[in-house]
Every structure is written in C-alpha cells, then in structure tokens.
Length: 341
Image 1: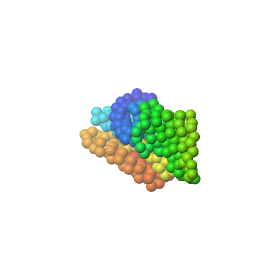
Image 2: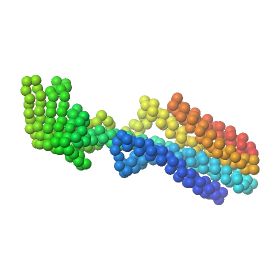
Image 3: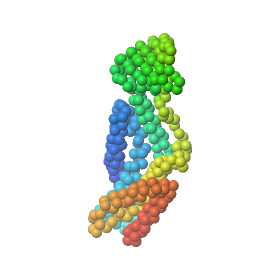
Image 4: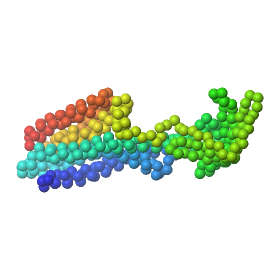
C-alpha cells in the first residue's frame, strides 16, 4: 500500500470511528427505549434487558455502519479539500481515480461483512430475541399472586391464600367448570409449586383433595402429590436453520421485505462511494457550503427508495435500487470530478 493510501485511510478511519460511536450510541438509545417499553407488559431485570440489547446488536450494526461510512468519506475528503491537500495530491499525480479505487475496495469489504451479518447473525439473534420474549410472556402469564380472584392456570381458575417470591404457594384452590362431557372439579391442596422449563409449565400440588361433582353424587379422591401440566401456545425453544429462515422469503412478505431492505442498506457503501467522492472533493474557494445538505439528501433519497421498492416488490428492489444508485453516482462522478480533475 502506498504512503498516500495510508494517509487517506488514516484520516478516514479517525473520523469513521468517531462518527460510528456517535451514531451507534444514538441507535442504541432508540432500541433500548423500545426494549424498556416491554417492561409495561413483562417484568425483566437489568441483566435480561442487557440480553435483549445484545440480540439487537447485529441489526444495530446494519443501520449504523453504512451511514457512518458515507458521512465519514464525504467529510474526510471535504476536509482535505479545505486544506488544499487534494489539489496537492492531484498535482503529484495521485488522481481521483485512485481515490475511487481505494474506497471502493474498502466499501466492498464493509458490504461483504454486513451481508454475512444479515444472512447469519440476524436470523439467529432475531429468533433468540423472539423466543426470549415468548418465554418471559409465558412466565408472566402464570405469575399467580396471593389473595387475588380471577386468576387462571390453563383451564383452571386458581385462588391461593399465600405465596412467596420462590413461587411456593399455600392454601391452593382450583376450580374447573363442566366441559366436553367432563364434570365440574374442585381441587384443594395445602401447597403448590410452579415449574417453568423452556415454556412448559407444571403445577405441582401436595397433600390435597379432588372433588368431582356428578349429577347424582360427589366423588372425593385424596392425594399426596398431583401434577397439572400445560404448555403455552408458542414455539418457544424452536430454532430454524439459516437456510430455513431465509427460505421464508418466498412465502412470508415481511421476511422478503426485511431481506430486500437489509441488503440494500448493506450495499449502500458500494453504491454511494462515487457520489461521496463527488460531494467531498471540491474547490473550497467556490464550494464552502452545501456539503451537509447533499449528504443528508443522498441518505434520505436512498432510504426512501429502499423502503418504497422493498414494500412494493422486494424480489427486484435490491437490483433496481443498487444499480440505479451506482449508475447515478458514476454519472455525477464523471461530471463533477473526472471531467475537472
């Protein structure tokens, strides 16, 4: 690698790391607020909130890295133009074509890493996140409290006299109404424990009586131990393979949209490299302002096209938006940079 390439990459990497930290922090705060909103539905401690945040990291990187790359490249080249360093480089024979080749290699490497993130890490983290939330919802669903009426465990109405934080209950009463040719039942137990293993819940009753109310009689059965099993209507614990997950794009519109949208975000560094060079390399005396407008206009336009076409026709959105953006970037580069420098 030439000394000029190392010089350009040094300036770029310093600004890239600073901007990435800022954007990553802002994005993380947004995601963390969404996570904490779940505490209104389910109870979670700080460690569990941290677990959910880790599951969202792959998606956070997809959003922050491409935008950071584009902004950092624009501002790096603009700062070099401001100090007339780009003019010196061009005078010494280091033309814009070499800058474009250098950063197209960097952007291609970044996009490759992001595509691996999309196809491997995001399916795993998304399923882990879903399973974790379903598990917590199932746990909250069966969080029976003492001295409260109207609580249910599966098909049984439950009332308990007392309980503690270890989920040990005393003075347990369960009632099941008549259904499907089954008679009404009443269970009285001295104590009970709820076991929760990967979403499969079991009520362990000890020292009690079962009363079955028939038309002409009441049957009573005494027991020392009895188990009532139930399972929430969820797929807790099931993990699709990566191929199974992405095969869903052919039948699941939401998954097809996600794939098209994430791929276009991942390809943004390659698609926007030439336009970033066109924005950043300027004659500072005549182009002192406008760089930030062009930066945000480019990002807003690309994201808008990505969202709209991924919604309308996700199967072709990736190809259309990427090729159109790269083509327009090349035309702008030809007109603003190659023709002048």
